[in-house]
Image (cartoon, rainbow, N blue to C red; front, side, top):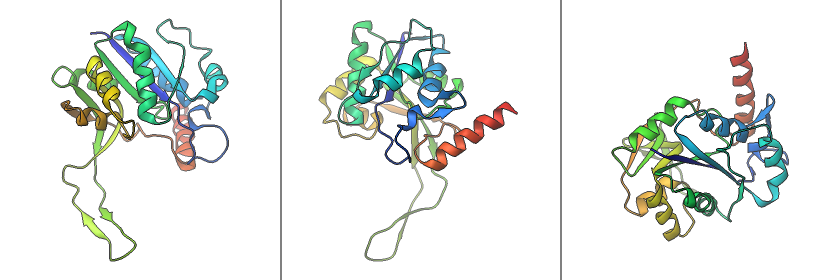
Length: 226
């Protein structure tokens, strides 16, 4: 099975303090983008990896990826005005290679495991799409400016992670038909009528979004070296 990967690194990281986008912040000698790319290049079935970056981040991406010597790593492509449009740019960069399936992953998730990647790929044998996810276990409330908070049932609620994998031709067509507003690729797939399965993610597969997340990532890396 031919597998390609889109690494979405076009975000600007506005929720994280400082001027450097989160995917390029140093993590013990490597940034999150580099760690994410390395994780997928370590998978033998992966034939292509294409990073999608913000047009203003070409220099940052070059510095992050210059040490990776692997012909499967394609040159970064510039993203679009939304996450979904950026994913579409990545998919279109892959279309001449005609992969059977594609995995779409957030560059700000540097700790994705080989087990999660394998589980998403395996789930695509019986579905059009697959998503790493975790069931919601905390109490959930809906709050409004007026009136008391209202409890929300956790039954059937999941926290989506990445990678999210799909039959390549079907997700490319779905993104081309989509208006570009979706928060993730499962939303695009479901809107297009694709059958998507969830597979078990990991709490360690977190996304670096806030200063606390970044501090946690640094701590986790330091602990792993001890």
